[in-house]
Image 1 (tube, rainbow, N blue to C red):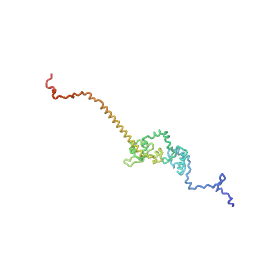
Image 2: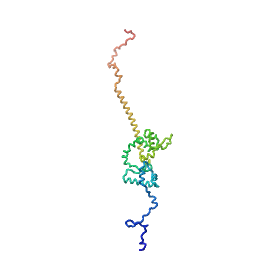
Image 3: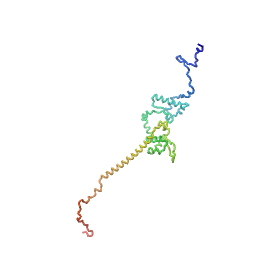
Image 4: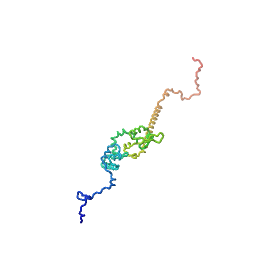
Length: 279
């Protein structure tokens, strides 16, 4: 055995473990792999930002606030948060809304939340406003006259109210005489209804047409019922009038004609001579 065999290994090449065994040094990760690895993001800070905002935050804005140079770590951290929430059985997730991220409750809790927010929701949007907003959302850009043609009623005030709530905006002008205004939905609309884009709208265009048809049929039926009631009242009045005795027939004297046969040879009474002087 040579001296080189008895020379202990350099401490730069080996590492002694607590149990006395010798382990080789861990190789360093190549620079290319380090570039692909996501940068660590403070998950608590990310969660706090999403929890504190009422509006969606884009990945670029979150990266700026968290002081990271790329949006990839933000996307990765959001996925990790959702995975953690799912494992813990939490009632919310981080969802993509209107091009950003926002913390939302799961749909399974919609009923219990609706009980709490029903009065507030009713005060914000009535039935007419919801119907008008749905038509604009599916048919945009759309003219007011087209909205009114579908609903069957005037919608000017309703559209104005939706614009005041920042749910509807002017989307342009039609290439028609007079250049009428076209209406469309806003980014606020996506935020309120939890949509990332208009492509996420449920496919209910056929349902809208059916609803409009039902409204027209209901109005026609109500009109027919009103006419039927009027006709019934007139008929009842006519029937009562026909059953009531006529005042003229009660005062007429009985007819003097008889059914007995007349004698053709019987002398007819002569009219008195008006030329004779009266006694």
